[in-house]
Amino acid sequence: MTKITFFLLIFGILLFNNQGYSQNQPDLCQWSEFTLEKKLSKKLSLEFEEEVRFDQNISRFDLLHSSIGLNYRLIKELRFAFAYRFTGDYTINDKFSYRHRLSFDALYRYGLQNLTFTYRSRIQSEIKNYYSSPNGKYPAWVWRNKLTAKYSFKKTSPFIGAELFYQIYNTRNIDQNLSWPKQRAFVGFDYKINKRNEVGASFKLQRGVDDIDPKEYNVIGFSYTYIFSNKK
Image (tube, rainbow, N blue to C red; front, side, top):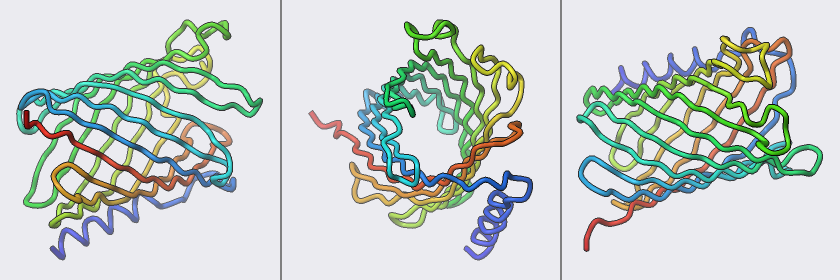
């Protein structure tokens, strides 16, 4: 237990080291996530997710995500997922910007007693303002790499991790094509109320990497997950 705690502490210090970041004042945001999960078989499950985000020091509605997807467990350690996400983004001009995203995930898990490492590789393609923008019909392609370490202790599971975003192609921001424009570091915990209900809280740091003057966000996150019973 002591070695695991020491490892997570050192990992956290490295992730949240702010050297090299912009001196801008970060924006404080709040993201709330609600998830419904239904197992269709032993290996296949259906998932629906709704997320609301607030920015400008949690004083302004930012956007709403609605997504639906399938998760398939090939073996114990390896899973695949496919999802569609619709986004309504409230712009600074008091208008809504609409986005449609498709994503494909490959997840690999490695367990070491109560400690689990999860690596997720995601390819996503998104179109934005299809009818109102000259570039709206051209999808933006992003490759995301996320690593999470989680320790399970009774009903509580603290976790820590990081994610890097690689922009493959985006006609709306061609200067950052083939670069790493964004990164996230996060820490939090999940609490399993019972077999069907789980809540969680997290704190994220989101920073620009290749931007000359990168935007910075500090994000307080809350989540709730409900898993439907398989009993007929």
